[in-house]
Image 1 (cartoon, rainbow, N blue to C red):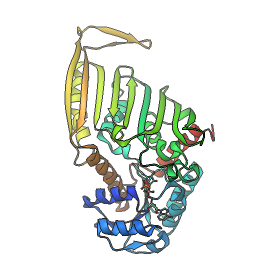
Image 2: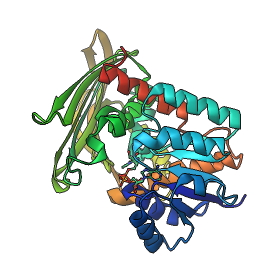
Image 3: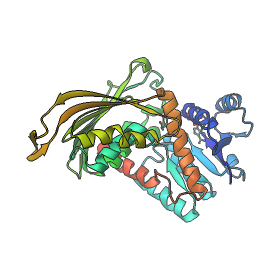
Image 4: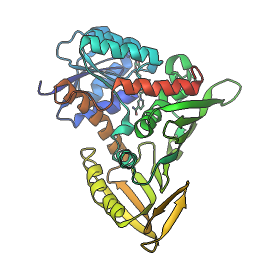
Length: 379
Ligand SMILES: NC(=O)c1ccc[n+]([C@@H]2O[C@H](COP(=O)([O-])OP(=O)(O)OC[C@H]3O[C@@H](n4cnc5c(N)ncnc54)[C@H](O)[C@@H]3O)[C@@H](O)[C@H]2O)c1
């Protein structure tokens, strides 16, 4: 198989972004779609020029030309459509969350194994070079143990009227399941799985519509992570940042699809060199088409014998330096590249070029495990 042929089930807002992202792919091409809404089908045909469009998944799945199915419907249908697609022998790329419960995700994992097909999920954070830098810092233990992380997500709700499926727990699973999984996967990846979580849901008013959630996770490596999601802003005024604090570094990633990472760290010459050379080179190669610039600023200089103490530990440092890593493309170009990379990674797995995708359905299940702990369904 030279090119991996894709059929998308669910031709709404996000499917359109996927289709645009895949236009630039040499490995994957969209050849068909299915939606239960005829207007969405027409729009998809118009925008993509693709003629093979069906009014449901059952009609799309027998198409022998389709290798890979992308499920981009509202979350409530992911499990059923996932079962159907995997059962028919198709490889599947799930939009998040992939299922509403960890048990349903476990069934999908088992089914993919039985049918000997590959599956992955669209956790775009994993693809971002700036988060890959944080992953390297965790792996390298460059600045000591991670101590704390927090997410502040002031997201937009101006396109989400009260009747939208997003607010309906039966259809979306709620904010922790529908959206929180992105960040639970990120912290599972960076810090390992949490041993304890507690979350709160805050309704907007007496209608009971939950538009804010707040939660804390305690990770096995002793890091404490807080998450706040508020779907409360106009798109023009949304603001997201994720901070990860190590014993000897403060890091802050800005934006829901981040394009800037600032690290304020205690370094020695060797660490400073690594941050400016090897780490930068690795991050620049992480996401094809997305380059990174680096600006450094010396905040303080210390004597080479200066000793510091913190958390019962003693260490040397010669300088405090601010590193600003900036992606050279705008957030939409980065977003599309992240989506494309996830799907191409699955395509490479399907072609046998690698044993498994970078992001697996086991990761999807672990993210759902955290989401249900936050919901208080299981502790
Ligand atoms: N990974 C990301 O960054 C990201 C971002 C936004 C949305 N999403 C995910 O994408 C998915 C879709 O979100 P959206 O904003 O595009 O929603 P949407 O409501 O715009 O589109 C969903 C589409 O699915 C169709 N549909 C519903 N049931 C169907 C069925 N049984 N068979 C075929 N089509 C069906 C609807 O008619 C609609 O056109 C959700 O799971 C959402 O969480 C992911």
